[in-house]
Amino acid sequence: MSQLHGEPYQPKSGFMKWMESRLPIMGLLYPTAVTFPTPRNLNYWWTFGGILMFCLSVQIITGIVLAMHYVPHVSMAFESVEGIMRDVNYGWLIRYVHSNGASMFFIAVYIHMFRGMYYGSYKEPREVLWILGVVLFLLMMATAFMGYVLPWGQMSFWGATVITSLFSAIPYFGDMITQLLWGGFAVDNPTLNRFYSLHYLLPFMIVGVVVLHIWALHVTGNNNPTGISVKSKQDTLPFHPFYTAKDGFALVLFILFFAIFVFYTPNILGDPVNYEKANSLVTPEHIVPEWYFLPFYAILRAIPDKLGGVIAMFASIGVLFILPWLDTSKVRSVSFRPLYRQFFWILVIACIGLGYLGAKPPEGAYVIWSRILTAYYFLHFLVILPVLGILEKPRLLPKSITESVLGNGDGDKAESKG
Amino acid sequence: MASSETHESNRRDFLYIATGAFAVVGAASAAWPLIHQMNPDASVQALASIEIDMSAIPVGQSITVKWQGRPVFIRHRTPEEIKISQETPLEDLKDPVARNAGLGGDVDASDANRVIQPEWLIVVGVCTHLGCIPVKNQGDYNGWFCPCHGSHYDLAGRIRFGPAPENLLVPKYEFIGDDAVRIG
Ligand code: HEM
Ligand code: FES
Image (cartoon, each protein chain N blue to C red):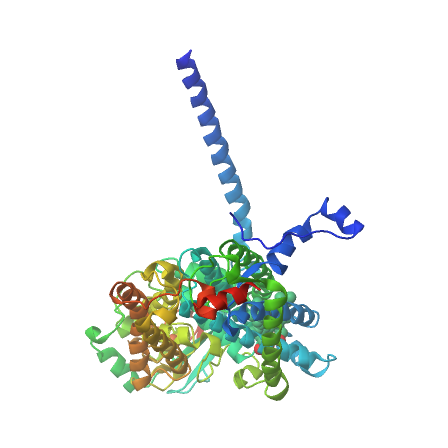
């Protein structure tokens, strides 16, 4: 079986019969999105996939509208964004939704990724699904980075300078590569123009990879909180109406959360220095990236060597690609792995700690702690996970998802069939 | 018969490989303009040199001028600053190379190799770590301090401490009169 299928689509109206024999699009969508067999025990952490699709749509819709008013030129970019804020009808709303939307997108993606780590969703047979997710994360980071350059504030300019200069660490070709990226000898108008072009393009590449991600999901099916595989039809429910309703409810709560930021505190997640126009002769006192990049920025600064710092930063994302092979345990879910549960939470705390340190100036105890946590981050993936799979004695797994939900009494089973 | 078949398939193989190689060369040459367009264009290259009158800079002061979109520091050094810079032992330097575009090669980073006239220190004001602009008269060596990740430069613009790997670059420049230079 190459793909899990729900009940096939049966066209009812004459028109749909005519259509399906020419373009069987409902035949494709119905069993994958409506009747798709989904584990019956998914909890709310599984709603973030749908929330991410919502975030991507919001960014694309608001972005296309912003692009109607935005001018990608160093002499106009900052002013045009101010124009969006002051003059364009509802421009303030559209921009605040887009700029806070990027943060919401990252909140959702981080929850989604840690969910995958908690329940072992990256393990066999979902390795490709996981890797596509890491690719999506990288594309999101590139998109958000280039988007942040567009308003051409001080932090836009200096963030762009620092991040593109990372490539100058590459031996021999470094300077060639930075000049190629900048289209000049420093970040300037050519850089702004190309970032705008790519900022428009990348979200659509994300859409493409999302299609692959969902395709891979529909071959292996969802993981679930027990981590054990679906064994019978009893273990599943059709996606619609059960999970459309659950996802919908979670989405409403998420939108409320989103709205609090947009309407009550739209600038709290951003840096006020970015409301100052870019000045290529003055570096702001503290260069701090947006919050969602802080852990990686802390890792970059933890290493006292330029090339070493750049390598560590890219490696911190690189390890995620090989995570499925670093974790040697056959048991997926943390529920049955008492030791991994502890280490999972230590990792979460280490990542939050790195985020905190990324926002601090690189001096004294901050540097020392960045080094300790950076070392721990890599230790977790490269040493703890491989060793833990061998040492840890997992708890007894239930026989099936249904058993774990309903207990193993026979009466319960009979009831679940009804 | 068998041998002629082998012969036939060898010719086929050759044609496949030749066609494939041709397509690769074609694709690469079509890709090159699409990559090279990103490099600095003619108008950016045209800003290659600037002339600066330095007569208004008093001893002990410095100015920042913009060259190729980047800041250039021109520092009118005091006799003490020159003395400290000249007497710094070369073993104390983190980067032993002059990084002087006018000298090139691997000459050492002695103060003499970093300037043309000792009173005038001219360096590109871009931190060799990740490109921030260092702040003057700060840091452990009173030269420049880069606030981004904490690099300390001395009075000859040489990296002494911090993550930056190289000394501040000395651009190519020449004196065109007593107190005037052409950079670039
Ligand atoms: C993955 C989806 C996207 C993300 C994560 C994202 C992120 C961002 C961020 C962080 C900013 C800076 C916000 C600020 O501080 O002002 C920005 C600005 C901008 N984005 Fe996007 N964006 C996305 C999709 C798009 C799309 C699809 C378009 C156009 C079709 C677009 C057009 C713009 C424009 C014109 C600006 C400049 C105006 C402004 O700064 O508000 N974005 N984006
Ligand atoms: S850019 Fe100057 S220390 Fe990093």
